[in-house]
Length: 111
Image 1 (spheres, rainbow, N blue to C red):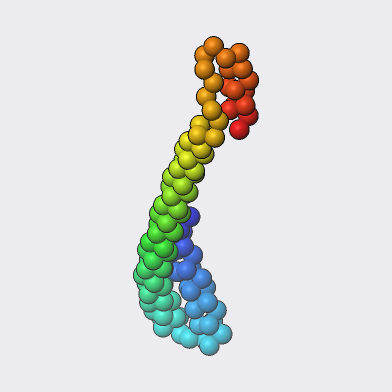
Image 2: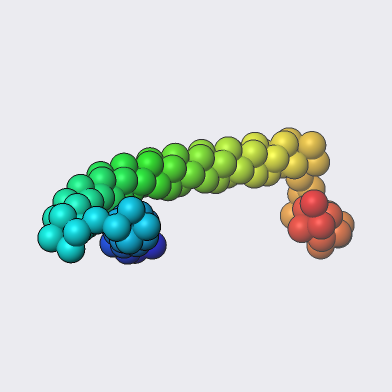
């Protein structure tokens, strides 16, 4: 989306520079128009190549960021699951007739 206009911008900047140089060097009108036309066409295609390359680079960066985020989420889930198992193993589960059952549940929730 952000790269949509880069092709046009590159072409117009090249055309502006060419116009200034043609005026400074006092080329005849027909020669100046031919030069500007060729420069615009050449830089239009160079802008297209630039846009395609930048698009691929940004796509690869986005994919690598997404993969990194997914890996982080999986690691976090594994850590959470592992810590829940540790909590269950650290505490001895009281029997139902024990009156401290509510205290035990409160301690688990705090961790």
